[in-house]
Every structure is written in C-alpha cells, then in structure tokens.
Length: 124
Image 1 (cartoon, helix red, strand yellow):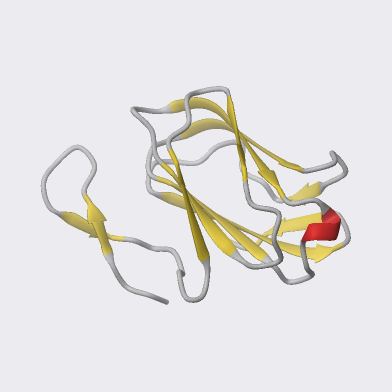
Image 2 (tube, rainbow, N blue to C red):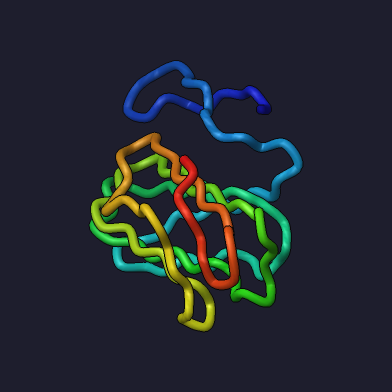
C-alpha cells in the first residue's frame, strides 16, 4: 500500500489516505448530486476519488462493460464526502453487484472486484 496524506476536511492538518494506489490509475471527480461518474473502459484496476462541496444525496458510478474488464479486476471508490444513496452500474446494463452498501460515509472506501462475467463483489 502506498502511504500518503490528504488535507483534513473541515479543518487544518492532514489525514492518511486509506486506499491502495500501487500500480493503479487514479480518477478524480467532483460530481454534483444525482450525477453519474463513468470509470474508464480499461482492463486495469484503479480508484475513483469522489469529492464534492458537501454531502451528495445521490451518485451513480458506472463500471466498464464486461468485455472491457477482467476477472480479478478491482475498482475502489473513495468518498471524501458522504454519499447518501450510492448506485453502481455496469456499462451495457447487465451488471450484478453483491454486497453493496446503500451509501458511503465521508472518508470511506468501497472496493469492488470482478468475480465472474458481469458480476462484481464488495471486498472492502
């Protein structure tokens, strides 16, 4: 795991970031509530850093289509702000997601791993 620090939200100082960045692509997004964030169509693991002005009432994250992803591939979602209602989809609409939380607390992570065709599981 790569160690590092982020500015502390709502105050001064820094907090360590809890996600694994070794060899992974990073995607930074600052969506508005109700947005859909589309992750890249590639066959590499990566993480999505979600920031915002405040709590997001709703957010949808779209993962790659089955043909553009590999078994064992992981996607980490890192929420710097709380997400009240989190929806995860797969490009093409045929994804199955096991063990998803309803939302994410601020500074929480969700790690999804592809375990078979069109199926991702929460391995957080």
